[in-house]
Length: 470
Image (tube, rainbow, N blue to C red; front, top):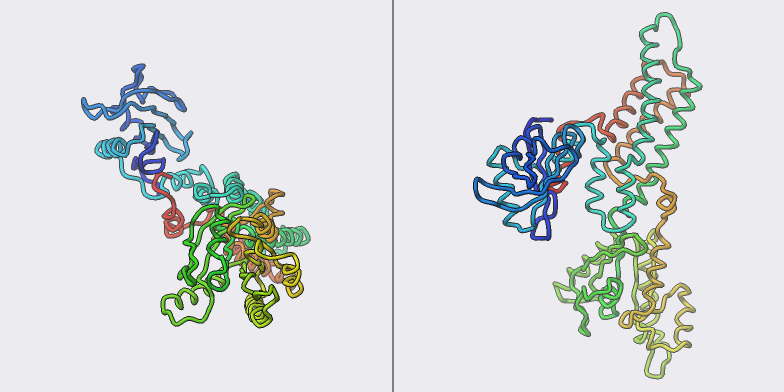
């Protein structure tokens, strides 16, 4: 897939800004850029030392396009592993387009999504999992996802896998050698040592596979569904959690007819809150569709917040309305039973309107109820602390390797399946040729993660999700 094209793209975000960086990479990068740049000190790009900056003008003939800073990276000492020029210009969208169009007219080609990082991978500057971590780093929006992406860019668990793969490859080579001398009945691969290696690999793979449950939610955010009857304060709670007026708040029941989602970081962990339509019997077709979607979102969530409107549970004499309370209690119990595997937070809203005696009455049936006032934003910190308690971030705090990529997860599952077959073969004392088949398959799945085993379709799928300038 390596070609001799010289590619160009905007490396910074599109649109106007203070500055913009235009990246040019390829064997002719310096040659194509040099005639267009006129340095203040008179040194051309072809003479400029690697990893240095120069101030000068970009010209299209006699027309000055901009005053820019030019960085030069010679040979393989660049992000892509090939000669690279980076032009820092003023952030006008017009200037960006003019410079890029000029470079294309002189022989550059517009870069495809992720093509700079693809070249870095193909030129051996990083393995495939590190290349994928680049996209995760660009899209990280909280401390935890940033930490995981940085860990993976530095090698993450793939360094460990490569060591295990090499050990397995060494044993595989010895077993292949045994096949060449099968008639002489010799054993080059010590079976006890090989058994120990297989157990070691099984342990590592199992731990990495288990880590995906944590890594996936940290990377994508933990979905939290806010449910309850109409007008209990779900949208007000969402706004309080986000600290902004994200959802429309009204005294009219059924205002939220569709789900509203937004994400915030709590303690460095991303949580995606989903404000759902109020659950009730309705003849309104649109509201009915919203309620149907509510249950779909609950199924997709990992935490459920059930909100109840507490003042409605008491009559004019401040006595508990038994009929109303029994109905709310039954609805809550049924919701918990429907989704028993999900953490469940019961929140009594508008608690500022309750007396201490009324609060005590409510806790007799639900000991774990939280009392808040979404309107006054009191009790929000307690909800945030409770949400964080559901996140097993021990591996993150210990800086352990965590798998966040579903492609890696699937490859690890397949690798473990083959290693388990090798284990069974050793226990049953199978012949070397049969063991070698399973070992080759395990090595194949190891190689899928780091990029020793690739194909054009796989690379196309991975890098198509990158931004153009990366």
